[in-house]
Length: 437
Image (cartoon, rainbow, N blue to C red; front, side, top):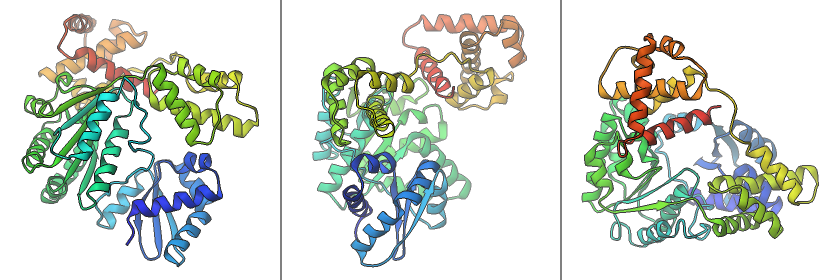
C-alpha cells in the first residue's frame, strides 16, 4: 500500500501538469490526506472556502489521478475545520504526521539569521538522538521554526522509514490530555507519545502554567529521553523566559541545544522573495524584489504571502508587475497600525486565555499569585489600550478606582525590573489581542 505522502505527491504532480503550479499551490498547499480506502480518498483543508474550491474545481482532476494510480474509480471526500478530528475519532484513527513537500531543507533559505538553527536541524536529522537531544528552536512567529520541524521529520523518515514520528502542538497536547482524562483513556494517550521514535512539539510555550499538562509532559519527556528517542521543540522564546514553566522542564529543555532564529536580513529576504517567486512560476524584476525586501522586514510568512498576493493581483487584473502594482498590493495586505480600540471584554478574555484562568475568577476576589498578576495585567492593558478611566475600569472588575491605580503602578514597576518575564507576557497578550481586531 502506498503511503499517504506518496499518494498526495502523485496527485499534486498530476494536477500541476494539467493546471499551473501557482493555482495548485494557492488552493492545495495546506491540504492533506486523512485516509485512503478502496473506494474513497478523504482530504482535509482548514478553510471551508478551500473545501468548496477543491470539490468544485479540483475534484475531477484528483479522481483522475487516483484512477491512474490505483486503476479504479475512487470517490473524493473533503473535510474542513473540526471535521477531520471528528472523522478520525469515529474511525478510530491516530492522527498521522503529514510530510509537507514544501517544508524541506532544500527549500529553506539559509542566511545569517537562521544558519545556526538550520545546521543544528540538519545534524539532528542525520543523527537522531545522538547529536543534540532535545533540540530547542525558538524565535518569533513566521520565521521558519515549523519549516525546520517538518524538514527534520521528512529527512528522518527518508533515512529511517520505520521510525514512528509523532507531531503535536503545545495547546493540542493539553486538549488531548483533557479528553483522555474525561474518557478514561490515559493509557492510550501515554502509549501514543511515549512510543515515538521522533517526538516533535510545536509552540511548546502553550503548556506553561498548566499544571497537569506539565506533569504529563515531564514524564513523557523523561520516558523518551531515557529511551534515546529524539525530541525537537519549538517556541517563541527560550525556556528561561517562560515564567509559568516549571523549573524541572526548563532545565530539561536546556539539556540539549538551544538554537534561535532571528528576523531575516536584507540579503536573506531577497533570496526568500526570489525563491518563492520561482516556485510559483513568477518573474519579478530586481527593483520589485528590492522594494518588497525593504518594506516587509520581520516575517518570512508575510514575505511569502506578499509574493502570492502580487501573483494573484497580476492574474486577476491582467496588469504587468511593476513598482506601482506592488506598492498597492503591499499597502492593501499590510496596513499600518490598527486604529481599532479593543474592548475590555476582549482584553480580559485574552489575559484569561494566557494565564489559563476563568473570567469569573479574574473578575472575582481570589488573590493567589497567578490570579493577582493576571488581574493587574488586565487592568494595565485596558488602561493602555482603551480610553477608559480608572473608575470605568474598576467597574469591569467590581473594584474601586484606587485598586486599578495600584494595579497599574504595580505592573509599571515590574516592567522596570528585568528578569521577571512580565514584559514578555504583556507583549504576547497584546499580540494576541491585536490579532483579533
